[in-house]
Structures are given as structure tokens and as C-alpha cells.
Image 1 (tube, rainbow, N blue to C red):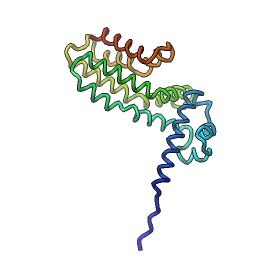
Image 2: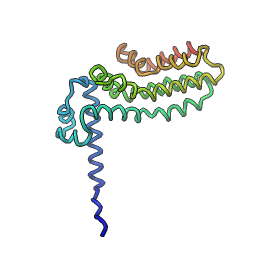
Image 3: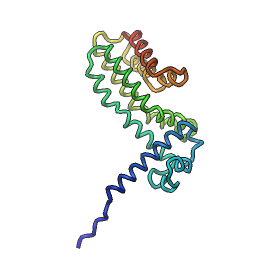
Image 4: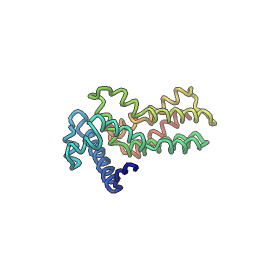
Length: 203
């Protein structure tokens, strides 16, 4: 006689997924606002409205939570869709416009996630590797955009490697944060400025 399969409740699975998502959301906000080192699992549980043991059972330790925030941020950035749009464009200025708008949307939409990761870097046991994991796909996408620009007419005057570095300087997370957070600019103003600078420099 075959063993009886355990019953899996779809409603229970959905409830568990919602709880997990809420834990990650609350943890992201707390890490961004207070700093990773100043937040405990108990703080995350309190903000979510669940018991501490529920946080551990659902997501894991504080380090596990941060790792999942990083992974979630990479997926949510949807950079692959944006890059398909960029690579279909044949005018250099249109490519830069798409990069300015697409990276703005990604940085604005993932702002709290980026802040949570940044706040963790000084106290994380391997902050450099964490930042690399959070941004490597982003940086590679801008390298791909630089290569695409150099296949168009007219291509940028500088070497392709320099173009890639400039795109990261302008459209990477640090450039956006400097203008919006440190300078207090609006996202619209930052987008317009970065686009003008890129066009004037490369084209």
C-alpha cells in the first residue's frame, strides 16, 4: 500500500507567502531607516506584527533576511526587460534617453532596498561581496549598453571601456543617490541632468 501524501493547503501557503513578503518589506524599511546593525529580529517581528519565532521560521536569521532582500531587489529591478528595449534602439540619443529613464525608474522603485543594503555595508561581515552581488547584473547591463552604443552611428568618441565606466558613473546607483538624496534634487531633475550630461559628453 502506497504511503499517504501529506495534504498541502493552498490557503496556508498563500498566507505564509504573504507573511514572508511582509517580513521582508518591514525589514527593508527598518534597515534603511535605522541601519542594519541597529535592528534586531525582534524589531522586525514587532514591525510585522508576528512572533520572533515566526520570522526565523519564515525567513531565517537577520543575515538571511538581508540576503533575500538583495536577491529580491535584483529580480524586482526587471533590468532584462529594460535592456531589451535599449538594445532595440538604433539612435544613440534614444539609447541614452532609455538608459536615463530606465535606471531612474529602477532606482526610484528600489530606493528603500538600496538604502537598506547601503546601511548594512559598514557592519556586514562581507559588505564588499554583498554590494557586488547587489549591483553586478546592473553594472553588466550598462556595459552591454556601452557596447551597443559603439555599434551605432555616430559612436561615442571615447573607448568602449571608458563609455561603460561613464554610464556607471552617471546611471549607477551612486550617481542617482548623490543627486536625489545628498543634493535634494527631484527624480525628474536628476534624470534630465544626467541625460544632458551623457549626451553632451558622449555625442
